[in-house]
Image (cartoon, rainbow, N blue to C red):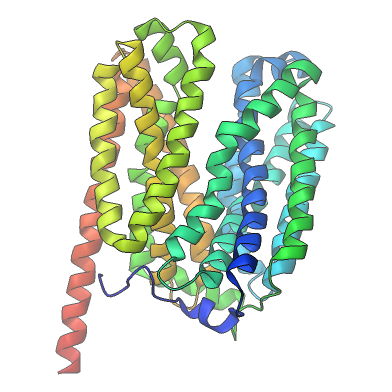
Amino acid sequence: MNASPSDATPPDAASITPAVSSTAFLRAVLALGIGGFAIGTGEFVIMGLLPEVARDIGVSIPEAGHVISAYALGVVVGAPVLAVLTAGWRRRMLLVSLMALFAIGNFASAMAPGYLSLNLLRFATGLPHGTYFGLAALVAAALAPPGRRARAVGLVMLGLTGATLVGVPIAAWLGQHWGWRAAFVFVGVIALVAMAMIRRDVPDMAPSAGASPWRELGALARKQVWFTLGIAAIGFGGMFAVFSYVKPTLVEVAGLPLSGVPVVLALFGLGMVTGNLVGARLADRSLMKTIGGVLAWSAVVLAMFTFAAHNVVAASINIFLVGTLVAIGPALQIRLMDVAGDAQALAAALNHSAFNMANALGAWLGGMAIGAGLGWTSTGWVGALLSLAGMGVFGWALASARAEARRVAVVAC
């Protein structure tokens, strides 16, 4: 397994990478990051506007929450489907097209007349999410200097994590003062800006020779691809088990006033930005150690939440640390590139399907623990157990890779 260092060039990148200057590289990554900023803002802003949405379309708040699930389902479905169907497209044209679909989806969401139409439109808006991030990661890694692939991916993902710190508060403010529909218009405008920047600053890169839907589907036959997706879907679910219920937990258990909730959420966003940057740098140094190390760190931090949640200051510090768990994102993205062979696009896109499955799994199990009467702080133990389960998948992947290496060695002899 260690035979795939983080600075190795995947087959897809080798055949499509043009020579670019450091300035051109930074401009391209910035353009891709702005697209990620638009998607991150659009994904998370609705969570703070559910009362306004519910009141406007005449449903309960829990029913309004279905629009969040509809978007996540769109991500899970759209990532593999679009990645396979567009395997032969030129990279820049595909990125612009995906961002155009996202922009249209948000403008249409702002005009949705009712509950059903809003859910359908949020599903459609989520379709390009995973394919965009997967492709943006491939392009950024292909353009990166040697030994800096994970940091290039981290810069793209910085748009997503930065959205929780900047984009979401701005969109939420617009939604509260001008109606929730204004928030979606704002996101659509950012997407249009991203389209223009991608068209101007991202090189016109061709797909790898022989790219086709059938070849992309070949990623599904690789055990290490499934192991990596399993680590993401299970091991990363712990963060969502805690964060999905962070507001009622801190208000009910720690006594945090409602006015302090935005501050804690900002600390979570700051933790995400920090974790993304640090995790990317560590992954460039030692990819597999970073994945294992972040899973262990996750188990410790989430278990700590059970105790820290009783004190406002300790809980606030802990929520910042929970945000740093996104450090595993760039590492897993690079790992998928390394094990996917010539099926790069599908594998990269599936990473974001796996993260959305982690979101659903963590929130579901955390809710079950609370519903079973174990208390608000039980989400910390749920999260820690999911992290440990992720470590189990990671260990299984290591053992499988070593067994495969021994088998190849025996055959070679």
